[in-house]
Image 1 (cartoon, rainbow, N blue to C red):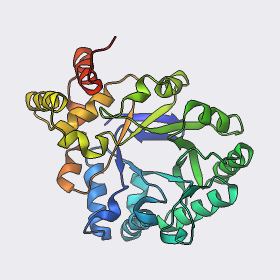
Image 2 (cartoon, helix red, strand yellow):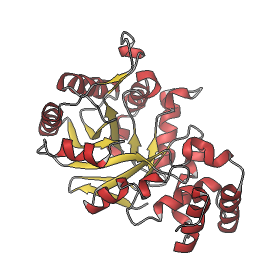
Image 3 (cartoon, rainbow, N blue to C red):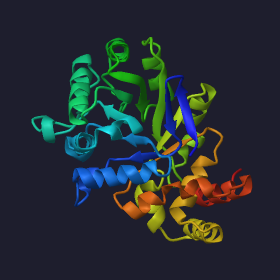
Image 4 (tube, rainbow, N blue to C red):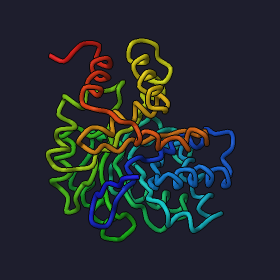
Length: 296
């Protein structure tokens, strides 16, 4: 599998395994989680996407148990995790309201919890999960810089930031923000035209795509788009999910789709997307059907 270099010290697998639903599985044992990771590694998928809030602040610890059971596994993967969302659940059950917190105190506490829960001494890539309308860019930027300097975090980025949010934080930092993880799929195409993707391409920054299957809706929908995906999938011997992911892979921005499933059979098929042949007209056929009208 191809890899995308974010810095001279960090590269990610082109497809990322998303672990936001790992806590929803009926089997959260270390052995079962290890089986999922091994299925990814067999395809060259080495990057795991986490967040402190996933599973009501339980997903990181579930992954950590797998690392404890098989310590060598940690050295085979890159961990991406996020912080900044405080919801009334788990260790934040006393919160009165769901909110964002990008203060230095919260970021540092979150990282210590993530390191402990995932049984690791460093995080490969830390993302601020959502733009915080109360963010103090000087404080947040300095906190991220200090984490990089300490070695607890190798690189930093953001998630769901608009270009102006990205610029605001970056101008108050020494370290480079290396990615923005945004929603991108045939079900959510706005980033292709609203400037979000162009901003990242202009700066040669990695683009991570969450919910590349539209939260599963692309696999259950009826209509012309679903029919076209099914036809392409049948012609190339893959499933429709592979076609939806291949549509993102085909883009010159070198998008990194973040795919999450608890089904071992589906995990083993994730790399099918890299086998799909998609020319420009096929890309636009799907784009046109997703938009519901032809391009101007």
